[in-house]
Amino acid sequence: SAQDQKKRAVAEAALAHLPKGGILGVGTGSTVNFLIDLLPSLQLEAAVASSKATEDRLKAIGIEVIDLNHVGSLDAYVDGADEIDRHLHMVKGGGAALTREKIVASVAREFICIVDESKWVTQLGRAFPIPVEVIPMARSSVARKIVALGGDPAYREGVVTDNGNVILDVFNLNILNPIEMETLINNIPGVVTNGIFAQRGANLALIASDQGVRTVKP
Ligand code: DER
Image (cartoon, rainbow, N blue to C red; front, side, top):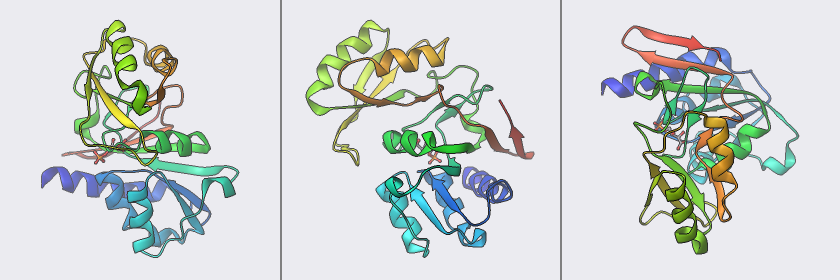
């Protein structure tokens, strides 16, 4: 499809921005999956995966996957996003991997985000709901507090995360200050992670459109 062509193009363009050798943090999703197939050319020492799905794909192409506890810091973390704005603040979690994605991103010096242009937005949380990972017992109590914040939480039926938790997708939040909203949601007891990636956004975004791949810095 045309969108797959853009995802493939942005994955190819990303290679030039990734360090050769060393240990790379690898995200989750269909765009990253196009990149994973190209990673052997970087001759990495190993990779740290942000989900079991990514771990399986890395192993399938012969890249060693190591435990984050055996790594001090990473030169780079590469991942997709559901939305990204001009500050390179993101909404992530469409693939239910947001907790491990945020953890691995937190130890990387540089976060490189690869997206097709459909993810480029002016205000986060309008086109795409904010995923929130929640401890199962707190699903209803967190939902009520999210309503108090002005959001409409929807339980993502049938999904259990790699960490054994559930996901609420929060619609209609009016996010004028992503950094502040990320903190507000994080402070609700029972919330493990929320899909606003603003306190730590991306350092570089590669965005594929019909005109090619452009790079954006915050
Ligand atoms: O779940 C995630 O955060 C993924 O990175 C997602 O946001 C991007 O997935 P896609 O590349 O399949 O759109």
